[in-house]
Image (spheres, rainbow, N blue to C red):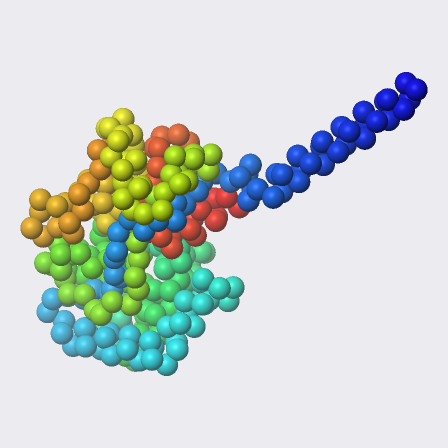
Length: 289
Ligand code: ARG
C-alpha cells in the first residue's frame, strides 16, 4: 500500500513537472528574454539620404538611382536579405583619396539592419544601396563611420558627399542639408524590460503615451544621441523648425549608440528605451539571443 502511494506521488510529481515545462515552452521564451519591443508606432517618419544644399547634381543622381532600384526590384531584394533570411553583402570601403573619383558616404553603424560593421566589412540596407549607387555613378565607395550626430554636419560641411544612416527627414535637418526622395517609412517604438507588463494592453500610440505621461522626471528613458527618438522624448512642438513631438515628462538619457541604451536598461539605469522600429527589433533579437 505504501509503495503504491509512493508510486502515485511520484507519478503525480512527474505530471506536475511536465505540465509546468509545457507552460514554459508554450510561453514565448519570457524566462530568458531581457527586453521586449512594444509593437505600437509612436511616430511616423520617412528615411532619406542627405546631400549638401549646393549639390543639386548628386541629388538628381541619387533620386534617379532610388527610382531605378525601386522599379527594378533591387531595393526589395536588398530589404528581403535583412528582413528575410538572405545573406547580407560584405562591403569594403576604399581609403579616401582626393585625387580619385570617389563617393564619400557618412554613416553611423550599430543601426541594424541599415548599417553594420564587422571586422572592417560593412553591411546593411543603406550601405548596400551606397555600394550600388557608387557603381552606378562610376565612383569608388568610401564609407566614413562616425557618431550619428556627426552625419548631417559632415555633409553640411562638405566633408562627405552623402549621409546614409537611417536618417529621418526633419524640418531642422532640412535647414542645413537637402534630402533625397524617401526610401523607407519608420516609427519610434518603446522598448521595455521583458518582465514589464505595463504596456501589454496598449493598442495605439495614445495608449502608450497616456501611461508615459503619468510618469515624472524620475522615469528615465534611453535613446541614441541626436536622433528623432531623443526629440520624441524631449519634445519640439514649440520650435517652428521642430518635428512637432509633444515630449514626455520623463528624463531623457542619451547614449552614443542605440545598443548602449539597451544595455543601460538591462542594467537598470533607465526604465525604457525609445528607438526606431527595425533597429529596436534587431537589437532586441540580438540581446535576447
Ligand atoms: N531615424 C532616426 C533619426 O534620423 C535615427 C537614426 C539613427 N541612425 C543611425 N545610423 N544610428 O534621427
